[in-house]
Length: 389
Image (cartoon, rainbow, N blue to C red; front, top):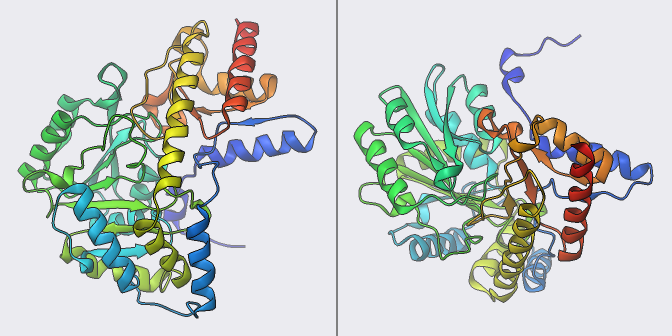
């Protein structure tokens, strides 16, 4: 009989994978399920990136590489981040990891002691709070307000921040709301961070999916380059979720610690995928840009369809590929609505509370599906919700 460490019970999970498992079980029973639960582009990785990986394998990139990443990829990332965020970045500030989640995990482990507070968005990516609790820290959820296009409740953030705050987590464009933090909000957040010397973990993995122009990064604001850890990766922008390739750009004092955490956990990131990453950043961008435009069309279709359903309202998401409709007028808990839609309509969506307390009253829909399937899902949802009332 195993005796488990207490800390292991603080780790949560992602509700998307739980719902996916239930949806797959229904499919095995012969049901037709439309999957709007998983946050994964439904596009293939661009062929020239795949070709670069194949060539890298033929060229012998099958052995251990440097723990913080291949020099050529760190160089390419530094140039790309410097250009897109408008800040100087050195290659030795970059740590490459198998997926972007390790940057989140390693940053929290390196900066948060038991009892330390970490400010994070609510609703927000559930792994933030999960890892904070695992490290012994105390998550401090700050509401994202629908009336402010899912910007932070800035008064609450300014009230809760202080010397006890050891990290502040941002995500813009956001999962699950699709919101993008405004320049004004970022300026106020930066002022709080500078005043209390709070490091900021800026999750920018959906940066390419910003429909009203490039999103602003808090790292670009005065005095913030030395306080910000940028988290980014290749999964979303290049439809490379299964490749597990991400990175962090961080102040030099943190690089040593994150690199040692990599040594102790992964040794290094697969070399041939890193070679493909160089091609992704420096090669033809047309496939990536076309994918983003397809998601823009899907966004417009989904929001219009949701707003046509009685009892449902939906803000137009400015980024990512999620809609976060308000269903409070239906008078049922969000989880009950999500369960009903899966059983009755064969549409897999997520309940807002899976992303935090302030997610109650909302659903999250990933519009990573064809326009035909999205239209079918909306039609099914309208009929199913009408039967519910």
